[in-house]
Amino acid sequence: MKTYLKNIKRIFDYTDKSEYDFILNQSERSEKISNVMFEIFKKQLKQEDFMYYPNTKNFKEKLCEFYNVKNENLFLSDGSDVGIKSIFETFTTYGKVITSEPSFPMYQVYCKLYGCQYYGMHYKEDYKLPIERLLMLDDTDTDLFILANPNSPIGDYKTFDEIKPILDTGKMVLIDEAYIEFVENDDLHYNSFIKYIDEYPNLIVTRTFSKGFGAAGCRVGMTFAHKDTIELISKFRQMYEIAGVSLKYCEFLLDNYNLVDTYIESVKEERGTLVSLLKENGFDVIDSQCNWIHFNTTDDNLKTKQIFDKHKVLVKYCELPHDNRKSWCRITIQPNITEQEFIKELL
Image (cartoon, rainbow, N blue to C red; front, side, top):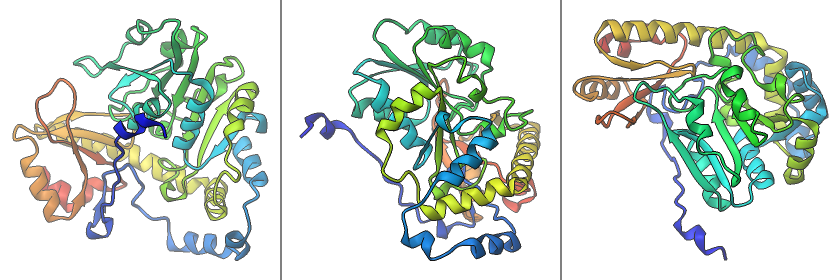
């Protein structure tokens, strides 16, 4: 037995979401696609999708066309977190993993599981993270840089020119683009680092169907990299990467991308509107390039909790660096959220 496992604590979330009218705590899509379109999808399902192991060939071809890559550049996984786990399995050898702090909690979990040295560089008081501060941590022991871009939970986005100095170190660099679709001025591929994977063999990019595509329950993630890098990561491929039904729904979303695009654009518009309204009404707000924002009040969101509890709104309350308040509200943005009674009452 690996004795160090006893010191690693994992958290299970068993929140009964059926008790709430608004599910806004985990960046999931809560607005359903139309009943007409969902019925069209259901008619595509066959018993064989449940009976037989999935054949991912056609789905991978559509993904490669959508992201403008070759099949040799793609690693499919059961959620992007499994892709990240496979990257740890491939490229870390008990060395340093450098990332931002705070960031996606699984980075630190995987560091513990694989015996890596976790180095999280804290954000400055203005919630900015200069890349040169990350580079100060780099040395011969560095196995991997990880940057969620945009970051979770702060929500800032960094351009290629900002991150290029890290790529130029030659160390393996993972860019986690779970929320990339919500960055302003995104035209599907403009803000993504995927287009640089052939130029930088040390660059790895992860994407997911959970956020912008609104299919968190499907657990489908993608890893993109130079073909030599993917060949190595693929040594850790699961026997069958994803479930057949998940494959079918994600393929349906690719074929009907207007359903995804309309949702994303609505979220970005509502995010801007809500940020403006909160600021106008005296709230402290940390805007983001993701599908959520953080806000707080002088009473540490006491009134917010009362209003949201009354309207059965599930959100996340957390601490943020450089602030002694304990209950910053992280709220997932949904289409028409500013028209909801709980927001009107809050304002």
